[in-house]
Length: 138
Image (cartoon, rainbow, N blue to C red; front, side, top):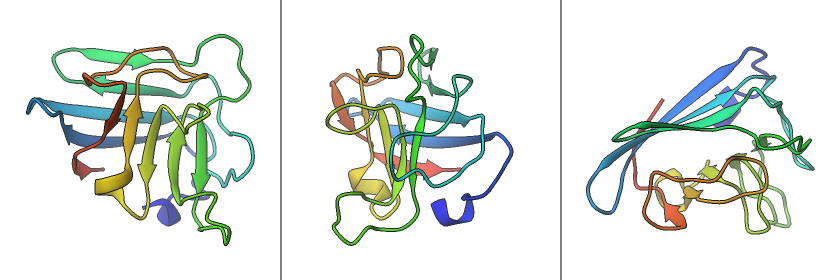
């Protein structure tokens, strides 16, 4: 997925259809407003990017405050020390990201968390750290 997107210079939206543990469908959206490029160190993006969730209602998670560690981490190549996986992450925590879409294990290692240092709090899921049960993506 990622290797086809790297270098795209226009805004991009990614949609991921998931199923919550209770059986409720949740659609997640990632809006990336800037150049889709490699970001091994630090973060890329701007404060116009956001994460969306659509279930019973629509929620928008915008960047909070004036953090310069805005939005996304892109890794299109596995690093030899395995410290960085291939994937797209938005947000930042000590443990990872607000949302992580794993390039090598989309259906088993992707997740969504309630809290991070970049985006507003909240989640469409019941647990703090929800492993995404991905059923489709676009």
